[in-house]
Amino acid sequence: MTARLKLAVQKKGRLAEGGFDLLRRAGVKLAYARDELTRRAENLPLDLMLIRDDDIPNFVASGACEFGIVGENVLKEAAARSPRIAGLETVMALGFAKCALKLAAPKDGPVRALADLQGRAVATTYPGLTEAFLSARGITAEIVEMGGSVEVAPRMNIADAICDLVSTGATLEANGLTAFETVLESEAVLVRAPGARAPEIEETAALLSERFTGVIASRQTKYIMLNAPTARLDEIRAALPGADAPTVAPVVGRDDVVAVHAVCTEEVFWHTLEALKAAGARSILVLPIEKMMP
Ligand code: PRT
Ligand code: ZN
Image (cartoon, rainbow, N blue to C red; front, side, top):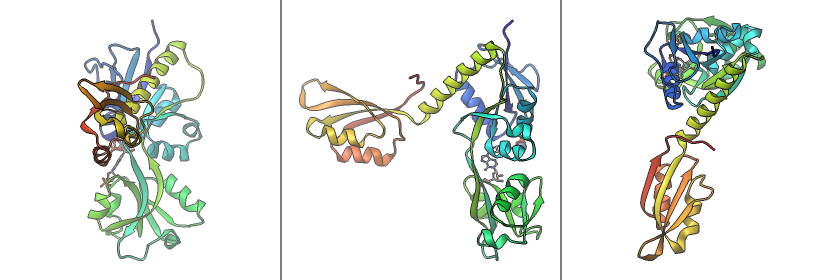
């Protein structure tokens, strides 16, 4: 019987959403839920373990799962407390669940910068990362550990500042807080414990990593098709973001125009299209790329 790779994924939440989407795009077909804790892949020797994100580093470090998908924020906080978790290897960044752990304080209060925190209280659900960040900068502050709703701490006079995850900034804004320092930039990562394992597990792991890499690359890669005036081809090529070798083909019945097809590996914004149009490009089409393999 082939050994099956066990991958720890968040059961429900922001990481679960991105994780399941990544797996689906990587061609993993999940069988109907057998139980609450595991999901079996139908077409690969792969089983998912569905758990809380905070438990993922421990599941991987203990060997209960060979791999895990977890936020760097959770991973590094756990690593600050456990050397075994600090020894986990990050295989790759996965490009979703992006956020930042930031220090923030009331807009019109006395705390404006890092130095103002000296001798004050900071509320957080990330005591390990917060403490390490402050002490590395010579700041001694009282860390008030909270289970959640950290943004209310200053208003309730529990702390002078907070250290919390921010993505859009709307939560800080709604609570009258301003961020003044970034402790950590974070995104979802694929982690594994160091050491050798069964060759079948390594094979599945290699296949998944390669497919994940392809999915991540194809997310921002687009296929552009346009018609360009032959005389301005160089200008148009220069305006194509991250396109090394576009295909240039004749357009039937026109010798002043050529068709240009290119794979753009950098994001294609509206202003990119406007620049192409200004350079004489017409009939511009931007298509998503579903799969990529070098
Ligand atoms: O039940 P379980 O423990 O598994 O879930 P959870 O409630 O701990 O996690 P969940 O699903 O909320 O978040 C999982 C992971 O998503 C986090 O560990 C981060 O790696 C990542 N992530 C990305 C975020 C955010 N963005 C985020 N904005 N996690 C939390 N937030 C919260 C933040 O704590 C704050 O309260 O959203 C609020 C701020 O958002 P903005 O958009 O208002 O700035
Ligand atoms: Zn959690």
